[in-house]
Length: 307
Image (cartoon, rainbow, N blue to C red; front, side, top):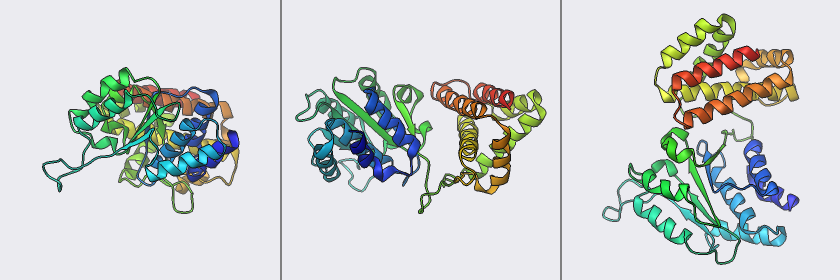
């Protein structure tokens, strides 16, 4: 089964962290009822969702997994359902969206037993295009998921959905990739914000508490800005870990390669891993609706204490 799982996730080999998380869930039989695959378009979210679905519906692996993957790609597997945004019935040229009726239909099908496989899998593509009332309608399904059901939400930004929805999903993050597979900064217009966030981290390391409190005060209640700070810190520590493991590793912040490698050489591995853990917990805090200002202040305090 391990080799077969490797084959299923070959299409997302450029997302090793996401693929490893899903492989571990399968190998340990600790599969969550709901996942949120978060990342930019083109990062392999849908391919990973289809691979994960193929592994779930064909737990014996082998030829069955290959056949399941092919059927899923054609939309022909009876226990794997793709839910996508669509225009309103009254206006075929209207903006595509996921509506309450789409969720009601998902619930109806989910209540039925799987036809062939051990589980039913629902891949909800474009989950960030839900109408205002759809997340609330979806909440009950996530709180009390039908037996033998796994739901995968695909979205670009975690903040696109209410924290009440995301808190019931296991979040799997996908980084963007350049055509040759090297990591790149997210191409969504927020690169400058991430660089400012790194400058904030550098200032906090140099000046301590005063800089941390000033940075938190500037953020106030801006959840998007707080997410950018947390994300930038996570990517920075990801680069530190990569540089610690191999001097020639591809870096997200490639323009700061010299500083990253010098910093990685100066920090013990457990400090770098601790920094990644702090970033992950800060991300979970924001999803759980903790104050953005408090989240960033605590994160910067933990990262500078580890410095």
